[in-house]
Image (tube, rainbow, N blue to C red):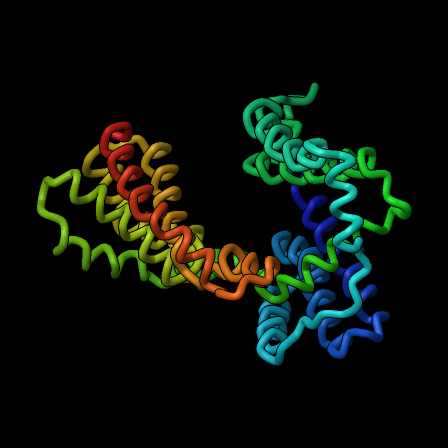
Amino acid sequence: MIKVEWFYWLCGLFFVLIALQVVNDRSNPKRLGSAAFWGILGVSFGYGTFVVNKQAPAWLLGIAVIGLAVLAGSGVPGRGHEQTTTPAERVRFADRFGNKLFLPALVIPVVAAIFGAWLAKVKLSDGELLLQNGSATIIGLGVASLLALAVGMVILKPKSPTVPLHEGRRLLEHIGWAAILPQMLATLGLLFNASGVGQAVGRITDHLVPKGSLIAAVALYCIGMAVFTIIMGNAFAAFPVMTAAVGWPLLVQQFDGTPAVVFAIGMLAGFCGTLCTPMAANFNLVPAALLEMKDQYGPIKAQIPTAVPLLACNIVLMYVFAF
């Protein structure tokens, strides 16, 4: 059986290698703090396996998370010397390879879909699933990323096999601490749900939704997903809160909605909020920094006119297809 932990370990190894690169880069004024940041993150991926298996204490991971927050608050990770191509070289490569440059990116969704839709159901001779139960999508994404890397190497034929590692480091240093923001916010959503925030919000919504009004419940769920995503910066963090408050008790249990449709469209409604918030720094602020835009909120301003009507469409789609 292919286990998801293998890909977590691979991610951890990647961050550890980045840390080793950074600590040896004397052009980075914050190299020690930056190396510590990426190193702690990398080790946490591997250590988490032992925590899940009850073979190691979880409180050390908690200290690691606090350490990452302290390092981020102190202004690390920093940026060092970039080992990358020049603008002229990138233009020349674009002219040479053309649309072939999109092939590695297209490999990822195709392979991930194959794993999620087909290989997730494949069983070995002893009846055991080929892919770890409940992790087919993540495993597929990991395999797809490795295949995309291989395709990119074949097409571009870089001078050194370390080029992808250098480019990965360059992107991480541009993104900085925001690279781990999705994980942190998703965990925050679980903590909110475990602490009863969803139930508290549910008691409030009982006074907002007219009894027996399906369209009001649908609108509240979708708009609530968008609003909580705007506040928390991540739809995955908003999902457990709004689902515990409205999605499950009202839309599924009371109105007999189809769970798969309700929750899938609910996530799409949350993503409408992602388009509108600086809290989603990795989606909205980081691209502005990478593109060196004069207005750091430029992506948000451009996305709001799409996000609002799209949210309305999601409300209609849920009302029509989920019940």
